[in-house]
Image 1 (cartoon, rainbow, N blue to C red):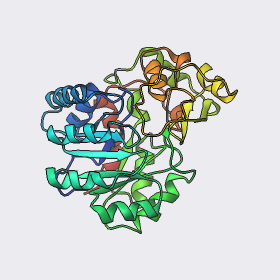
Image 2: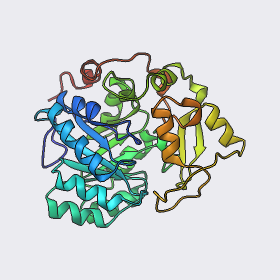
Image 3: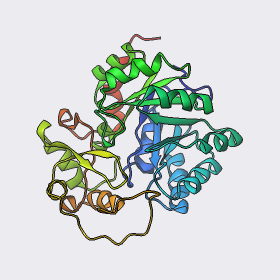
Length: 311
């Protein structure tokens, strides 16, 4: 299924870009090597760190497809995007805000730009400016959220409004979910939460254990200082935010807009390192459905059941 003009992955499965340092070279490279699109999350990295991650992912991926995700909300957005383009990644994905400039940068470099949106209006604007594809992200997604509308409703609406490929995202955990999104018209899917519970994901074991122990009622909505709601797994940190308590922060002005209620990058980094109760554990709504840690290869063997018998 060729859902980008520039390349044709074996399977139209994009591994979502998860900041901060959740989606790094070992995971992205393994996904690309398995026939999907591996994505490094640049948010929270320095430019030089991003360059190193891209080069390392290439070594693992072989001829596979490597992309980079950059949140528009970060102050170094332009520098990170340009570094990814200079490293000749296969695509750049952007969300958590909307950049018009990025399409010109991508065109100049000859690299497709993919935009994450949650509304038909923004999908049309992205197509007008030159997006190669749209990631239509619904309310079931993890991390920062742009809507309270379900993925199953957003995907056909956006698919009917644009001519470029539409990638479904939000709450997709298994081959049945993929089959349903394709039935609704999606050209592919983006999945993040499922890949946290992979052997190649480099987060702390306590982070993965928090995922595995999560029940449906443990998945909560939190307020983020970037000005958007977010979805995370309940812990002491999320409970303190719900009470209105805010930790002291040392702000280095990393975001374009920030309420300074707490440092979102520090909170995400703490949880990645295993300091679970001192940080946020972002996840999708359906994390409770995932019961085991598998290799990326085995995850793909399970996911690609959705494509058996398809041409």
